[in-house]
Image 1 (cartoon, rainbow, N blue to C red):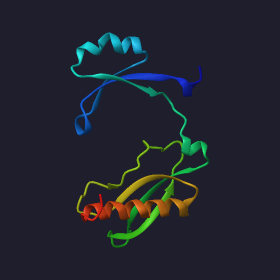
Image 2: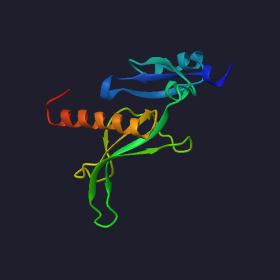
Image 3: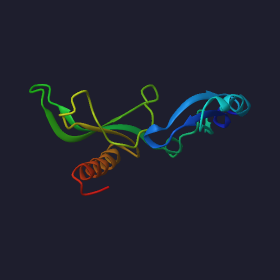
Length: 141
């Protein structure tokens, strides 16, 4: 059995914002043995070390920011910036846009994308940022 075929079994409870995984097991039998300890829980099967289809399709991983800090003025300067990530600094796959940093008043958004090149990453990020801003303005969902 190869690493891409291994699975793990998670006991989860809740829905939507209340959803959480309470335990993970190496076999379904082990998960079944303790499922009774958790009310209204279920067992979910997950691939362990799954192959990433984007990576196998030759795409590259980028992190994109909506602003950068000007080193002279220390002010945020708008413009989409993309940086390629490598296997040592890959974070979890994230398709959402998030505010960046510990200062919510700063409007610096970031997103992670799989793209063919830097220009493609910037195009994808621009679409996500525009959609996020439309949602915030109440004109999209």
